[in-house]
Amino acid sequence: MDFPCKLISNSEEETRQLALEFLKVLKSGDVVVLNGELGTGKTFFIKKITEALGIHNANSPTFTLVNEYQGKVRIYHFDFYRINKEAELHDIGLEDYLADTEAITFIEWGELFPDVLPQKRFEIKIEEIENEQRKFRFFKYE
Image (cartoon, rainbow, N blue to C red):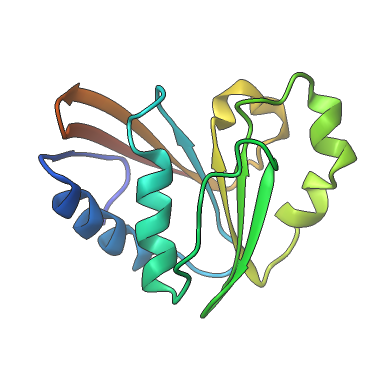
């Protein structure tokens, strides 16, 4: 997968395949930020990656702020949607999670608090086109 790139998914199965293709470029220590409106498939995309890593109980951390999973690799899954101020992220130790070089960190709604995002990261922007069709735009920041 080259960056930046734009891909269209026409179904959940195609989105699953896209997630598996993206997983091939991920390694421990990576941070992946997913942005998109409600219902565009951010959590679905993450779940397909975690399933491939042996984690079958991943769900949205909307109310818990962060979920931790252990499969073939440790996963941290954040959701910034219900965060009111940046200080809340510091209070839960976001910097420590991001510094864990043994884990892959996923952040949904990262665009809400761009100042806390690491410079080195992947960003995925998901847009609903219609029904199950989605436009995925992938970026890599060094």
